[in-house]
Length: 396
Image (cartoon, rainbow, N blue to C red; front, side, top):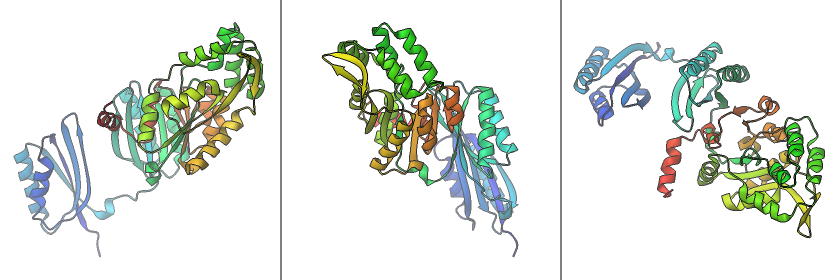
């Protein structure tokens, strides 16, 4: 038995109410079957693709299409084929491209790399126009996702845009646990440096912090050395720093949206509970882990209380939070910028280096260079329009 005849119909023109119903109304009397359908409107222009069985009267079907197109003032193209022309789906992936701005050359480079890897772009969707432009490409036929991810990462670095490659599937709609670093991720500063400024040790602490975040020093040893320089600082200075902390742009939107979608949100920090506890209360976070400064008689002693939350401790906290939330590690997202975030970033289902040091960018599956924390939402397939609509419903 031969392959069934098909007709691929493409309709383009100015969009207005009733176009789709008029088209399908004209086809309603034909003995055909709808095999595939895709419609998109870009800046008031409609593009509709429709794959149908050709039926016994292909000439009559073409005439009906031409008649309705003339009535609507649109263009219609119809190409004959067979159901054997449809390629097998192969490996399916989501490729998310973020630019500030997003240049045509970036899109061209991404498309070329996808084609060179033997994959096909099935659909392109815009997820945001601001604060960054984000598009998502659904691709099929990617038999070597690791190679594709590597080649796209190279292209993104050269073109100065951000890119993420993730498997397609139902997991994207499942419950997530998102775990963030605090200093230089959730907030815009390093708390220990703010404290050191008030202790007159700012330059020395900043030097050691920068080396530790690059992975050049053991984190615990460097942290204890920096904390020792804070000895004698009054607790009022800690309160001042807590009040001075500024959230990263998009942080509130990210947390609010994740919670609205029933995801759980946590922070894990090499910083201090004297600051992170306030962030947990302010943002309504589900879990947190951080170090605690020892305070005696209203002053810092230069020591820490309890075990240190270091690089390995952050990964353990991720696992602990996931177990408490009932979320598999494959559904976790870890976000950070420093070397002490690497273990949790590589342990999570999706690891994101956020404006990170080179060592972290190399280890992470995804690297973001835009300064907006809510860009994480676009990696999860959530559009800016969906966020704004939900905010409007909530009266925000």
